[in-house]
Length: 281
Image 1 (spheres, helix red, strand yellow):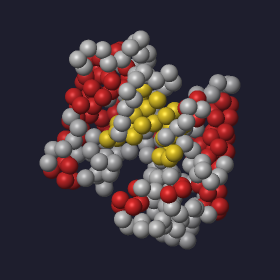
Image 2: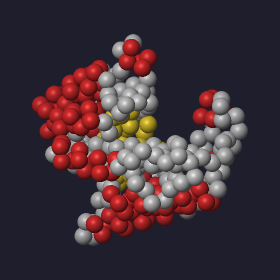
Image 3: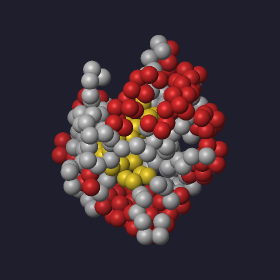
Image 4: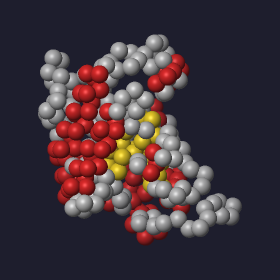
């Protein structure tokens, strides 16, 4: 989370904020984790968990910690340099390289460590259902431990949220379904979420140079459609290498915030009407 984001956050009118921990270097940790691979160069001393507490104080809202935790140092899948080939291997059965048991347990331990340190309100897994769901009970163990811990933090009431993708009807009763860059075509009986981005998932200078970001109007229309169908919108604002957002992005966020300041009562804490998609809209 950049300082620019901190300055902008108090004015955004958001109901929750998310801090991604996308761990791709084998030894990199965005918080001072106990479980760590010390054989490779250590990461810089960054504690984004405490940064989220700082954001909470500055914004006056209730941000959540988002866990997007991947330690991608297991054996690569076949043809991993071919983008078309690798993205066809979303499912475990499509030739993806199975991680070792040691790798899986390290993931479990790191996730549990984060839960114990920062008590996140929400964890987002960029995965089909729970992590390793087709080859291990690791994801179930993480979820059970997290839900039980959250219940203890809130005097017997479970207020935890776990996001996952491509969920079965049964799984949607235990997790919150996330649709990446997509939306439901109907009112969903259970809460769900759309995640999308102003540009690309990672900062792309070319998008900025050609003024290719989603406009505030596009984001607001998406938000209204999602909320009308019992959903939530998680919007990513990609940061540059130095942790800041560019001027175009900040202007878009501030325009969304100005709209929310006037219309937030029609968005926050609302429930869908009997039908969605009325009229020419």
